[in-house]
Length: 387
Image 1: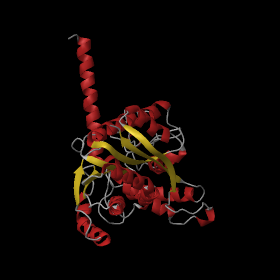
Image 2: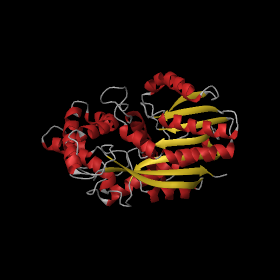
Image 3: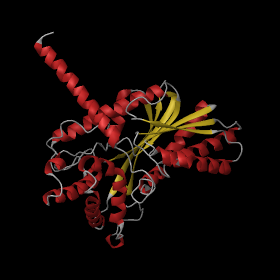
Image 4: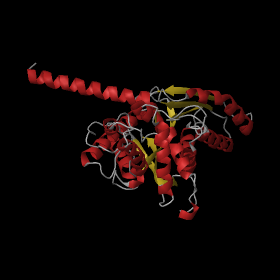
């Protein structure tokens, strides 16, 4: 082996090790706030519940088609990125109710239900497990003695790798999880002053984020194609955007406002500038076309449904009117975001600044909500495994 070949090999090994370390860092650091206190995800996940409700008709249609075409004796469902709190079992319970109505209508015995709840190892699985006995009692009471056993398992790990045996799943659901990347993309050194893609981000930063999304979603689809039975289905909802511009305000604005709060603290000497410039959010909010393109490119799945929806930052459905802007909307939205982002901020900046960051963030959000119609955009796709 020549010296040049040896150097190239060493470089490749170093790059792979670096990528593995970054993936490990996200796996260890990224999690929603656990517990049930004021800053927990369980207490601040109204937006996520409303999105699940908003897209529930797509999941119900998919599980109906799946059950009627396969009639499984045992129905295996996986919820990927389940987090903890009231949302974790909400969609699963709705799917079981749909199947139970169908099997009664068709005159069939109830299948057994095996439900896998997946999230990263830092997720608060204990809170989920503690809620299961009461959940199972409620389901049994609501649906009567005819329902089959509902068995639950926790599956910690990244969904950008294999999680389940081959051909073991019938249905996969994921909501507001797949926008999270396996790692912070490489090549973001010149994204100074930003913590995510922004209107001031140079093209190479936008490209780095997109390419990381492509790699991650491609791997996700390959893994799930191995794990799903033929004819199995998935319904995936991303936090996304309508626009083909990855730095558009509809997907980046919420992070730009957090960057404003952090930059203010940098200018006051409360946060180190180098620390600020080295912090980037491992997320990509895709457009419908970008989601469709990756699914079609891999060729494992046929696309049954693709839909875009929107929900206001404050979770309310009323038409925007500045005079109706609630004085505590900034507080509510900042709490939602804290439940999601605190683990990453603490890991990078330490916990001493957190209260001050979100106090400033709250004020910035309240000001913008009072003047603008701020929305989260959701991209939902329903797909079926081919062959």
